[in-house]
Image (cartoon, rainbow over all chains, first blue to last red; front, side, top):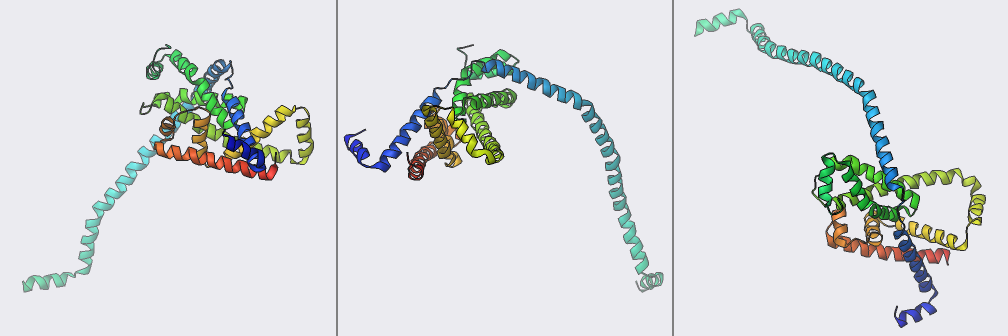
Length: 120
Length: 192
């Protein structure tokens, strides 16, 4: 710190307060930075990983048959519904030309057709 | 194992050697803990978050693609987990403060009654630091903590935060400026 700053801090209360806060915070950060991790960290971590792994495998073991059943049901549903849906749209496609033909048949009278043939 | 690189240890772990994970943890546990201290300011909480971080690392290592260095990837997880913890903790403490609101005065008095002046001072400073950091925008807070606690270079911080180095310079500069302004305001409101 320069002499000029020092003399200002001794005469200015506001700056003096702020300077003290900064020093306190710097010292707190330094002490927090120097804190050491627990010596039992590794033991605790390994135990936690082990228990997490066991929990997960227990979870999957319980759910596995349920998931399998769900997949089978979903498969059956998809296998049953999809072909029906496709069949329906296929039938609709096949039906549509006939509908047009029928429509044509209904709108043009047989007599008219005969007249047209005669004229040509 | 000590002389092996992080990447070699990661490869060994992925091949099924769990000892490699132990060595990686031993290499980085203190560094991760220091970052957690910067966010939590509490030794026990920092230990808990560090544990959460390494469990996450254990789970996610198979997904690590090596696009950044292992340490950068690890510090990213550390920052994200610590931030989540602080948010969760703030909510938990808010709920707790509502619970004890009726008994606030007696709680504070009995709490302070058992502490020495030094510890009270330290707690006050900790409170001030927490508030000052909480008042910072998220990116400024992260850059400031990584710079002050972990003493990482701005280039390292830029890799962790996926930002240009110049942006990190600006973030740290603004964080210091905002902290200073906060302390001036704090002094005006509370005095020393």
